[in-house]
Image 1 (cartoon, one colour):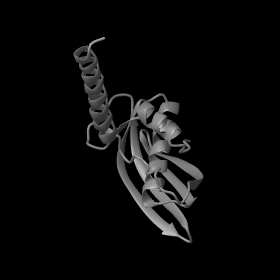
Image 2 (image 1 turned 180 degrees about the horizontal axis):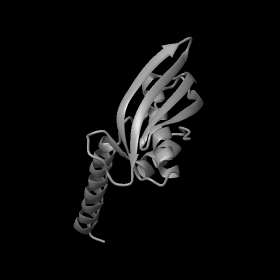
Image 3 (image 1 turned 45 degrees about the vertical axis):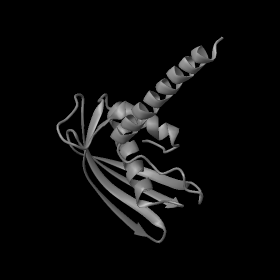
Length: 144
């Protein structure tokens, strides 16, 4: 095999890898509240989810996290709960309305409200439930 042929094949592989990296970056940029798993301190401890159906498609999730947790960990946990709840109820999407986060005595709590729907809802803070649940499994964040 000639040097120019080898170089051409190598260039094609580099182009494919670069395109793959760009596409991965774009997709990851679309995922909301991706948890930070690079912390050396350890993983958070997830204490559970309380789910309250407020009205039809309006659902409240109260979650708690302790250990080496952050505000982002508890917010991601509430999003994972909302995504799994939407799937359990036969819906494919959710829209984030609000999340209140607090910390007391080393326990982070989030009180989050989402709407669930079968079609992609209007708004900027929508989630595809299947994608989010898959990400939650990958990052070892429990769901409902």
